[in-house]
Image 1 (cartoon, protein in one colour):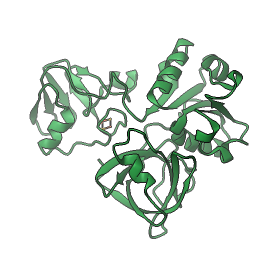
Image 2 (cartoon, rainbow, N blue to C red):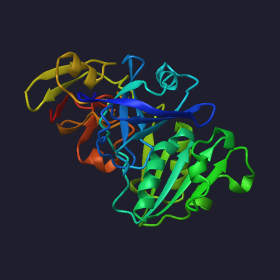
Image 3 (cartoon, rainbow, N blue to C red):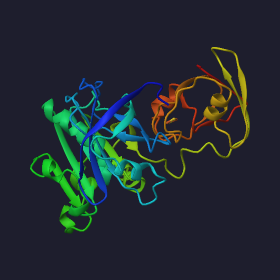
Image 4 (cartoon, rainbow, N blue to C red):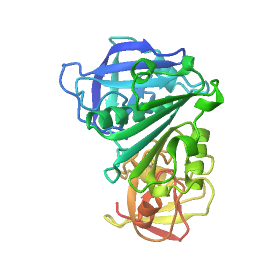
Length: 319
Ligand code: FES
């Protein structure tokens, strides 16, 4: 969790749809806000700091005068999104500095952005950055209907944007074959949206031959198979820097045990989707259950303490 919070003020608020509110935040002193790269998110203290939620920054990254968030009122909200919808102009909001594990690839010269619903938010910032840099990109925005789509005024007239509505004619529906085309080594795909939408796009793209490394993703929630440290036997975590050893019982997460013991371990989402808790494994065999690390990062020894476990009796971490 962030140990450095920024105070901001809601300087503008508008309802983009019946369920999506757009909030512009500025520094109370009128100072520039910290720099961020497209795809970044911030932690937000919601509802009198009772809850912490992550929201992507969707405004242009070159504009340091304000941050823009867009928040969908979740029907199954535990209070986070509804707390954000209750904000009014002039209200104060504490946020973390921006963090990013979903940036624009510097290995690709062509970028295909695929958004499902509110997943458009980080991709909008990417589109701003790619446009400003004169890059070759397309943004595919899939939504239930025009009435449930935000930012249409700024997207509709951009020739690089394709809109796909579930209630529209068949020929405008998004398909991997028709809209992304065959794999190309210089092209990166970026996907963000609800879990089912992301699973559909990623599996269709991989089925069409796109390699996993070409597909960049950001989830708002873990999949059914990931994000949970539940299940699996007990093991011991050893911290290389202090030599401390901690038993992780069945059903406990490494992160919870370390925090309870007073270890200063980094974290944010606690769901295996943000990457803030990643540490390096120095010895032992990890049982990866996150939804953020690539196969290459896992092979390089990276590990999420909030969701992953060990197959070996002892796991030594670079902490
Ligand atoms: S705290 Fe977010 S991935 Fe572990």
